[in-house]
Image (cartoon, rainbow, N blue to C red; front, side, top):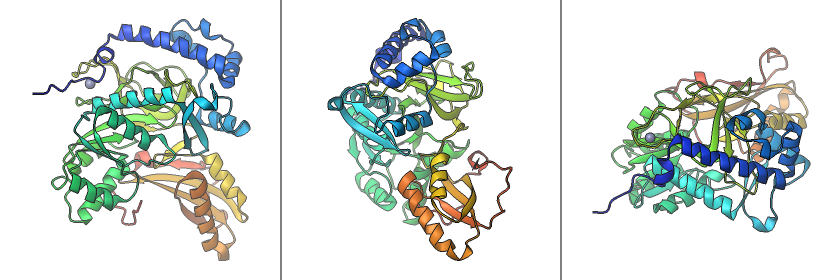
Length: 440
Ligand SMILES: [Zn+2]
C-alpha cells in the first residue's frame, strides 16, 4: 500500500513558531536589503521613511518603520515610469513572466520567482487536500492574471492531471467534468455557484452525476451559509485559499477548518485600517503581506484592502503550527475588487469624463448568489442619445477595466450629493436572492 504523506514540507509546516519567526526574520532582513539595493522605488521609500535596512533588527522594527505599499501607489509609479515603474530589480533578460492586472499594473516575475510561487501554491493546494492522481479542472482565467496559469503549474507539481478549462464556457465545463470524472475543481465561489445552477438546467445533478470530491475556492467575501450551500450543491468538500494578483496565494485551509493556514514564505499582518497598527490575534483588520521570496518586483508590506475576521492562533488538529487567517469579511480603502478583479474608481471616473453629456455618477456594487454586480448610475440630460451613450460606456469600461457593468442613465439631479461615489452593498446582500437575468 502506498503511504500518502500528510504534509508537503513537513519540516517547515510543523516547525515551532519561535524557530519559524527566526527564519522569517532572517529572510525579511535579506529581502529588505535586496529591495533597497536594487529597486529605486524602495530605495526612495526607505530613505523617506528614514531608515536603512540593517537598522531593522526584529519584527517590531519592521512594523514600526517599514512603510506600507498600496495598489494605487504601484499603478501611479508605473504610469510615471512605464512599464514597470521603479520596481524592477533586474534586467529583462532575467524576467520570465509578466502578469497584467487592471490599472494596468505590470507584475514581472523571474524564473526563480515563478518556481517559488508555484511551490508555495502547490503547498497550499496540498493543505487543501489535492493529491497525485486527482483530475483537476481549473475554471479561473488563464489570460493576463496570475490565477489560472499559477494554479495549472501548482496542481501539476503535486502530480495532478490538469484540465486547463479556464474561465467561461460553463456548459462545456460540466460536460467535460462528467465525462472525465473530474475529482477536484479550482474556482471563484461565484462561478462555482453558477456551474451548479447551469448543471441542473442541463438535467445534471452536480452532487450525484459529477465526481467532484473537493472544490478549492479562491476566497472572496461571502456570507456564513454560502460555503455550506456550495458543499451541498456539489456533494463536495470545500476549502479556500487566500491570495491576490500582487501577492500570489498566501494562505490555505486544511480539512479541520478554523481559517486558512498562513504560508511560511511571507509575513502576514492584520492591521487596523485607520491607525495602521497591528491588531492583536483574533481581532478584525486589514490584511498586509510581504512576500519574502519574490525578487523581480518585490512587494513589501502590501495593503491588500481585504478585511479579515482576524488570525486564529489556536493549535490546529492537523499539526501545522502556522496561524489561520479567518474569513474575509469586506474591503477597505480606495480599490474595490469586483468579480475577482480590481475596480478602480479613479479609472472609471476618467472613462466617464471622456464622454460629453454626463454629469454626476455613482458606482454601486452588490451581490446576488455569489455573483458580484457592478452598476454605474450616471446623470445625463441628453435623453435622446441614451442607447448609444449606454453602449459606448459599456464597451469602453470593458476594454479598459475588463469589467462588465450595467449602466443606469438617470436625469441630472437624481444622485444625492451627500451619498458616497462608491456604494458596496455586498456585505448586506442576501445570498439566496434569485437573479433570473444572471449571465456571466
Ligand atoms: Zn490545520
